[in-house]
Image 1 (cartoon, helix red, strand yellow):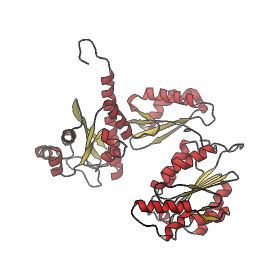
Image 2 (tube, one colour):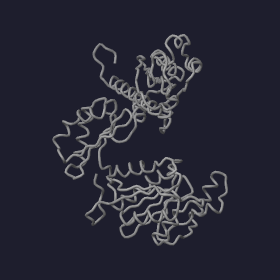
Image 3 (cartoon, rainbow, N blue to C red):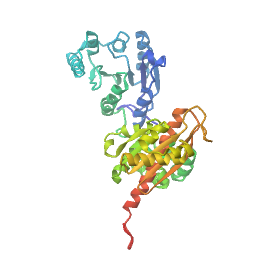
Image 4 (tube, one colour):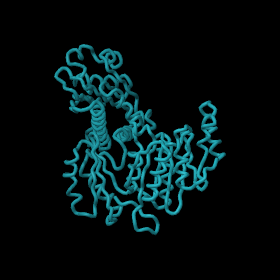
Length: 438
């Protein structure tokens, strides 16, 4: 991956990320900023050259900022912009840049307005966040009180962002990325074409696609990234020998070859792809879960406009809840067990009927670290799909940590639903034959 070069420069742009906060080093807060910022920059052709996590001490912050500025063109700094005594980023960076901190009345007004929205009054320490660099710019924060700060001089860019992800992420996408684009420090579009797949392993995917890639030799760069039940393949041309039109053509050939194993181009997840198919087919979905505890329902409720296609979900771990909420017969569970093909089908059918949905998707089984029962080992999962033309179940086996079993089960269920919706859409689109009702 080759980063864009600054105007008039022959070398690539060097990016560094500094994440600040004792809570990160103590493991009290997960450092998701690296994965988020790294992924967003990577999509635009930039590979982060260094990331450092730094304590809240002013001396440590100054030392790392000086090092980053000496070695890099763009330095992104997260955290330490809050109102408390351990938030020292603004002052430490100002000292390194030789910038006076100016109190900005417009920032103060935004803080007052933000507190008024939640029925509270801002205290004096909140106004510590109203200072900016004398020669810098302010990045408004629509989801918090700490604005971001932007400073650019002599080909160097320093960007300060607040630590909470719900504040940082939209600010980065809506304000930082466009600014870097305008400076020519990011590609205007993604630097690669991503082919998202499901139901095929990483090595099998490489073997299957190799005949398409082989004619292009070193002009084409291929990268694979395996997730839980999914594999992404990224195609790019760092040398520039292949333009984006050719990359799109190669990706389209891969999609045709993969058939139903192809999920989408880009970064949409399985739930979003299923949602688009449900909307296109004018169908609705309901889900029932035992082993995954609401994770499947969350995948759909997390999407904007979910009420248009998602009827709802039921989490039913006990036998009583399955009987009361879904109408699963007690005799069925006593005979076959709650983790069985029969129970999963009854759950899928029951939730579709209870919530008046066209499709019902159910997951039951053993995701915990304790032993399974009835001959089912830990990781034995039963997924069932109820459709307008029938109901089926599948048994899966995912030994491993509980979180892994749950996520892989959800992905497998979503992939099964996706394939069924594709086939249903294909059947609806097919012209009727003479003598056979369409």
